Length: 333
Image (cartoon, rainbow, N blue to C red; front, side, top):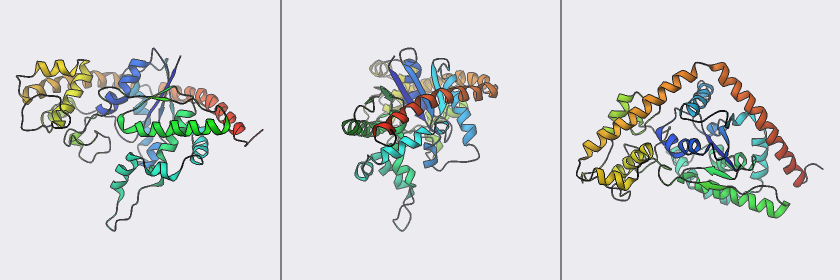
């Protein structure tokens, strides 16, 4: 079977954007691919993480994966930090990627703006700059065929492919060159308050973010107050009507209906009616998810056992891959 790899940071509660942008595709792919899904706890260190709750967030993420439909008997879910080979390969790749390549990463440019001080200097952590290198190590270490990502991560996959090809040309066939899988809709769910930015766990205004553990009534309020426009015409036009277009994407992803069909259904309706229907769809989805979540999270011993067993499996794969890399680049005979 072809292999897929994917990961999410345990820095905060999961959002609807996390589900629609990546996890939904993982669930739909688990019968067709070999799945390796890591909890990206090392990546979370590049953010303003909370050391007091990060471990609980990791367990919550594992529970959420299962409650959203991932079968732990089909998917290998593991902690990134349990596998030392991730950081070892990260250093090897760092020595084969240039500063120029990393400085062109759009996501770094955007996120580093949040760290600009009043005197125009930046306090962005180095890990934010080096993030794509560790991401490349995460992927190449497991010979992944495909990586499920949002549009904002596509540039990072391109860098991963570039360094894989570069090292293959220099040392022989070291890495499998991965392909990105970017969903047609849902790859980039936007903020409800500001539909020009991505819905994110780290956005300061939580009114624009739907968290999977939000109370259903709070989510209904968020959707009903979501920013749209004065046209009052349900139409998919991301350029001129980004707010209503974003809501249409959410509607489509949760119902598996084509956007054109949804637009046709509401062409004579007001935004208010459309939002009310969407709020019901989202709240029903969350009620179902949260019921499963509460059932699973009560068995903490089982959760720990899953992570321990998967760490052993991944360590064997990763250590063997790293050994072959070290041999190829001349570090060992």
